[in-house]
Amino acid sequence: MNPCELSMSVAALANAIACKLESTEEISALAAVFIQLGYTLETISTQKELKEKTAMLSRCCNDAKEDKNKVPFI
Image (tube, rainbow, N blue to C red; front, top):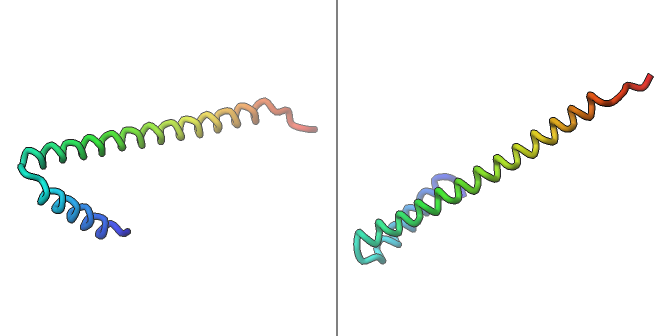
């Protein structure tokens, strides 16, 4: 799905949900739930990226230390 299709799909879904809800308070409450969901998913994603980068840097540092400790064959 391209970005325009995704945007239109989300807008259509928002309109469909809003039409089914009784009041603006319900719409606001549901919007708050989805905002919280988005922030939580972003937090999880950021933590995973940080963990992956930390592991990669650790492997690179360990490889560099091993290379320094190797005695060249003469």
